[in-house]
Image (cartoon, rainbow, N blue to C red; front, side, top):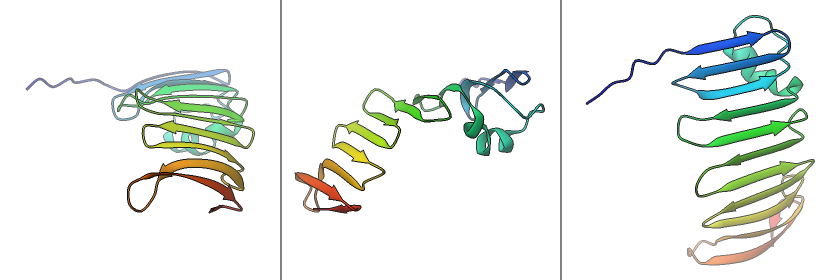
Length: 129
């Protein structure tokens, strides 16, 4: 059993850029970093509100890309893809395909029903019809 002793690393060119490499969180970077000191809580909660472009790779292999204060964002891995742009949401996975407006106000879903069979649904005011 081999153990890797990786240490977390971070580079911050305040206020323009922040890069991090942490075995527990993954690797990523973002442009515009308003808080000058290393602070995970500040970066996690407030960072997305002023980030122009951000990218990260999670420890499980998932990747994330966001830009323009998360007006556009995308998460993906080998099996699924999730794209969000200005209120429109698209999710594609082996057992799920969805197109949603405002989180389900209007939309289309192709997901398993209670019996496990794939079914088509229209979303209207967050109800599946």
